[in-house]
Length: 87
Ligand SMILES: [Zn+2]
Image (cartoon, rainbow, N blue to C red):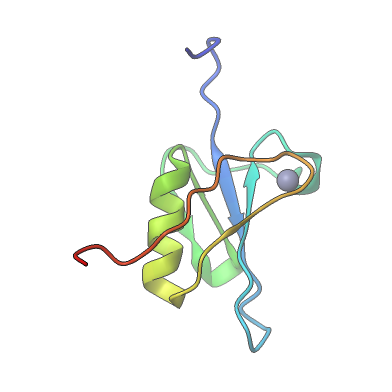
């Protein structure tokens, strides 16, 4: 499944904006050409979070902001709609 390289995901947020807009990118996306911290390290205060699990990012973002993430149109990461469990 993996081609040898562990592919991660980056979640861009805009905390300065009134409405939190969440965009999920792949770490290989050209729009997020920045050095990422090793392993899982949440950098939410900086408006960015990275993880190797896109679902985890989506759930985390949903819990933090109550909003669903949007997949980047450039790198097209797998984005699953996060809804409250239980139902
Ligand atoms: Zn992207």
